[in-house]
Image (cartoon, rainbow, N blue to C red; front, side):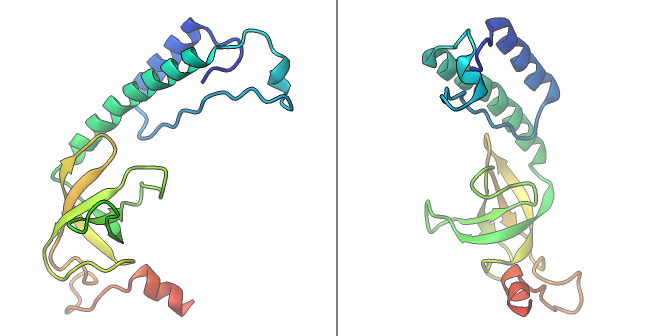
Length: 165
C-alpha cells in the first residue's frame, strides 16, 4: 500500500477488485521507502498518513468479506488440528482448520467438546457454532477422535506420527 505514484483512483480500483474477488484472506503491507530499492528514486511518494488510512480502509473491506464468509460456515463440520489451550484463557482450546496458517490467519476456538478431552496434536471433527471477523468457534464432536468408526481405534495425532518418523 502506498507504492510511489499510487493515486486515489488506483486505490479505489484496488478496493473494488478486492470486494469483487471476495478473497478468503488478504494481507496488506505498507510500502517502505528503502534507499537500496529501485523504487526509492521514483517520484510521487505517498505520505504516511494516506498509506495508513488506505491500509485501514482496505482491511475494513476485507473484514466484512471475511465475516460474511465465516458466517456461512456456522453449522458446518470441518477437521481441526488441536493446538492446545488458548493463550487467552484456560476456558477455551485452540485449533486450526487446514485453511488456517499459524500466526497469519485466524484461529478456531473450541469452547466445548463431546467425547474425550482434546489433546494437542490431535485431528478432530468440529461443528462450527459461531463466526467472528477472522476466528471461528465450535464444538468438537463425539467419536471424532476415532478412525472412521473402526471399533474405537484412535487416530494417531501428528505428534505421535512425528515421533515415528
